[in-house]
Image (cartoon, rainbow, N blue to C red):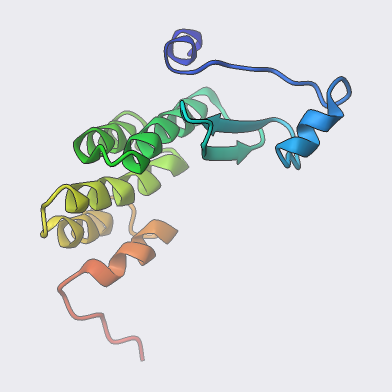
Length: 146
């Protein structure tokens, strides 16, 4: 994990008692808080609270994927999102990554990507909030809920 962070981020550790103004500046509400910026100093991801190593790495990888997405690098973003799904399938980040992988592929020019992603959710993360968000992409009629 240390190597991954060192290769992809410039970490900064700030202690609330030593630098309270920095906490205020970034709107930190709880510790630990991770705020990930891109090279242009735009915030790309934020998450709070302790996470086990696999979940932490998945969140950091999501930050890299969201950065690629924000920069319009659709193929790179899709690859990075899919890497999260494949390497960290049991984390909360995986369902979000599947969603954004589909969006990245769609924005990259594949009109069938959204419907395919919606079908993938039925198999992989059917009970996630991300599956609900992707449900509008399906070409199948919704089940009778009466």
